Length: 340
Image (tube, rainbow, N blue to C red; front, side, top):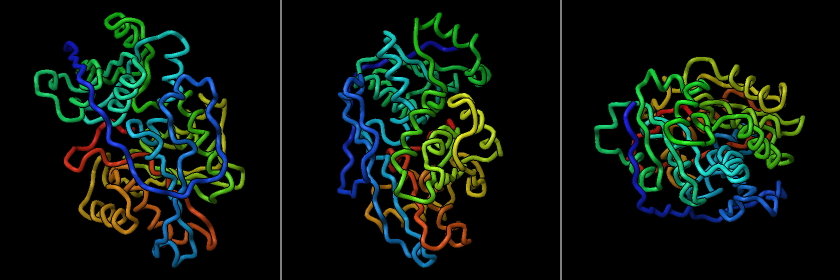
């Protein structure tokens, strides 16, 4: 394992902009929440979009703009990190350690949270060969936000879920809270249940892109009995239904809510983006005056929903909500590669 790299030059995130229609009352933050100073925008806004590809089938489309929750911790990154950040603050830990690939959204969000809250962060990065190369823009951003980067071999990275590996990392970096790749643990799943609660009374179907399944597992648990969740897999393998069930058992003790995983729209695998998908995402954003879409997650989600509407998956007169779990980081940056 290579040694860590550290840098602490501050870097301010760009603010999202726009005016949107807010939903009804949601879960209020507790007055004593240690994260309240970050002023997240919760519940996140609901935006109705008029799109003929849905309206011609009698379907109403809403966007749940989780990308506007926080400029540095957008979308499900906030929802997954928030309970783990609270645990760090409430237990007296001052360091959070997590895992990711060379272009990981999760690592960038964790590093930004550490800067904003004054917490130390350690990012265990897959690929020891990267230690001797200049940092790519994504990892450089992590370093500027104060994250200590620790590069490991791919064989060591595959041990990221082993308690013995965690103990070895604690021996190296000191006492810390370990958060899994992508942030999907029981605490994160329970927090994502608030997303489902925010959508009660607003939609018949709530759809979200899935990498690890944590957001779907929580969202489905928070929906009302008459609603259902759809997870659109962004990577192949057919493992997501089992992951969602496992996460619900860990978080709630058993199955919760009505949900399904749609696995036809991963486009060939994680971070695989065809010209057709890229054109679709750019066109959707232009049609509805949205910022550039995260193609790997949100683009695949919306592409899937258009096709599902055409297939008659949604009954006439129903409302479908697409959860915008993040935004494009930069048009020139490569995609993250840790299947979040």
